[in-house]
Amino acid sequence: MCEMKNFDSLKLTNTHFGYVKDELPMWHQHYYQNRGTVIDIGAGCGETAMFFLNHGADRVIAIEADSIAIKMFQENFPESYIVPENAKIVLIPAHIDHVKVDIEGAEKGMIIETHFPLKWNLIEKNRNVTRLWRLDMINLITMHLIKIRIAHRIRLILDRVKGK
Image (cartoon, rainbow, N blue to C red; front, top):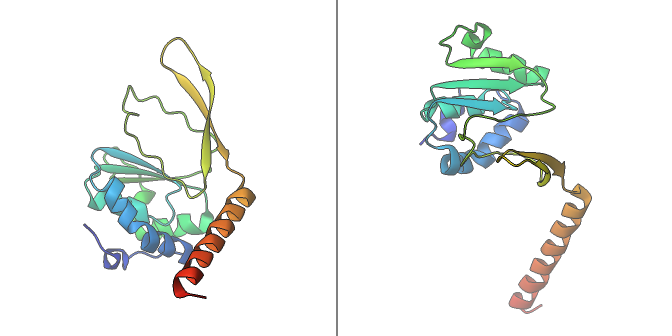
């Protein structure tokens, strides 16, 4: 397993450094053994690409839209400028609007990470096993209000325990 110090050589924005700091334990839990090719949509400055390569991925296809992150990614992985057939890292500077996944059953067990709460809605199911899903954002204001209520209840319980 890697540690925070393994990412010291990377140039990262404060936001991307925070992702590594906060999410590294989760990455180890869910992404620890990566074999074959990993598609990293929203690849940031290359922190997850580095993680995947250090934990067994043969190749990372990184897709990133943010120009600052792309510049840092290219500084962190200068070899990503060139895209030979056997490149370990391929960087595609692009914004993704839609994703189609049809990889002959390899979707089973696939992990999808997102920083935003989403809800899957079934749009269509045909007589084969093909399903068309749409991801919708859960109302963030509602999520925030739920967090406030939970925090308030925890505070009430802690106050009772302390005898206030």
